[in-house]
Image (cartoon, rainbow, N blue to C red; front, side, top):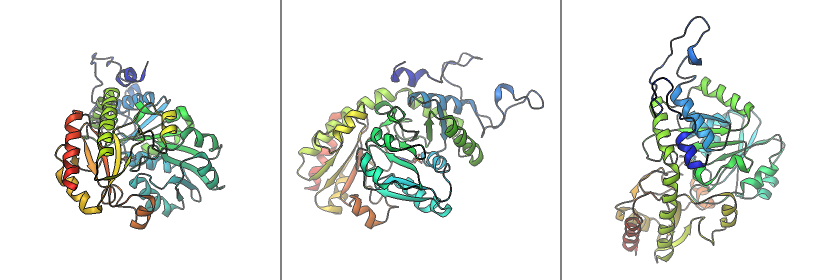
Length: 381
Ligand SMILES: *Cc1c(COP(=O)(O)O)cnc(C)c1O
């Protein structure tokens, strides 16, 4: 099956008991057992397993061309499940513009347990190769990165990971429709399903997918032990979103190109960060490893913070809010919102300046979106 078909059918066969075409929401905490040590159909307790969740785990594994999927109550909970594979003394390599919450987990939570993290300004195989030590056990990348839309060479890094180093890709920005990192050599793919996969900004969720049985078993053990699982209703919403992922991503892409074109023309704009543009430094790698471009782009405004304030006040269709990947267009100010947890000196050094605005271009009519941006940019001048 091709991706658009898989999103609708894999792991989502009609219910064998009632014929229900959609997967029923199984709202129960526990399941009747047929006798001592005889769980019916394998179901016992809702934290350990629930039919709505297992169905979503299968569909997400199929979406990422993977064998095994696990769902969590948030992308951050899925991220924590991966870091729980580590032991004291282990080291993580990540990029400087990693998701703020991932930076916070590594620097403020796992550091206490003797796991260290180094954040590299590297996008290539060589950059990561040079930084590996005998303590390195995990390489964590996002591509495109948040919020600067850098492109990381996934297949290149997969070639150097070696047997001792796990290679994990947070694929939230690209979505499985535009990029499947397991095919490029990653060991684990992580998602905040809150974003493109659920797609309607109405649910928080996370997932990981892998082809390796040993990693799946360890993460599944942790999922049940720590218990950060999504509710059956959240699983339903996420699966419902997944069904339309292909058509939504096509529209996010064409709308993003329309908005990027408008930003490039504007006097008030200093720089546009969008990997779909031919002069973006990662464009060639992006074309090689991605099938298209999601609706994420960032830009800097001339005139610093006062310009940013006027711009966001003047928007009427784009909503000023955190998050991304929903049907509605959003604008955010990373330095005071998504990336506020990162100390200001680090933020400025890596390019997340006060003038930076990040857009999540939704699936509204492109003319309305372009008009909204044009009007807000004029208010800045
Ligand atoms: C939002 C996000 C996360 C965290 O996911 P939550 O569902 O908010 O916990 C992780 N990585 C990326 C790239 C994100 O955008």
